[in-house]
Length: 167
Image (cartoon, rainbow, N blue to C red; front, top):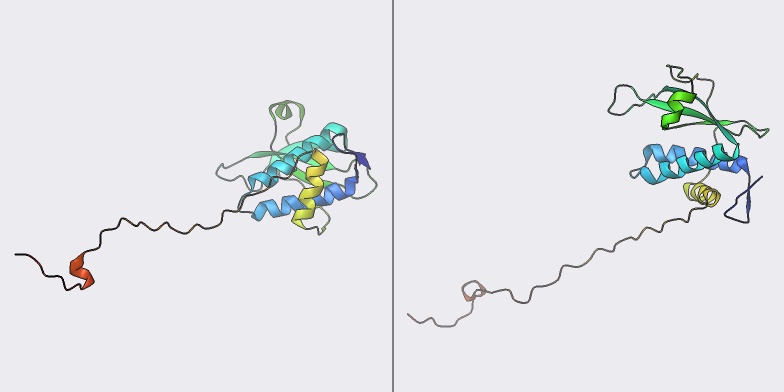
């Protein structure tokens, strides 16, 4: 159990691992990825800081995006627990290039995370509680009706009125 300094509740590292797995899985297919990846990175940073996660090495990303090669850090979460550890990638910081060894290849295939199922909302609540952040409420804008313009000129020629015209 980890006692969060910002909260009086205790959080289990295994539930944090499963929540990280769920958020990471959803972030890969989300339309707005930034919020989910921010939650993931903040959680990983805090786990590293308190000693429940460790940066292992640098390696090339399997999905580098627009670049031909991109480097990521492999992080092992759950180094103090008896259960299976989880592995995640994060963007390296400047000091990571100095302190960590670059493997050059993608991580071995035997480092797959165990499958787990947790809803995204539950996972976000667990991680936000752990990092001490408050969930941001997204305002859903209701579609507004267009305002009617009452100063619209209406032609008598088109409305079929029978007024006589002066010549």
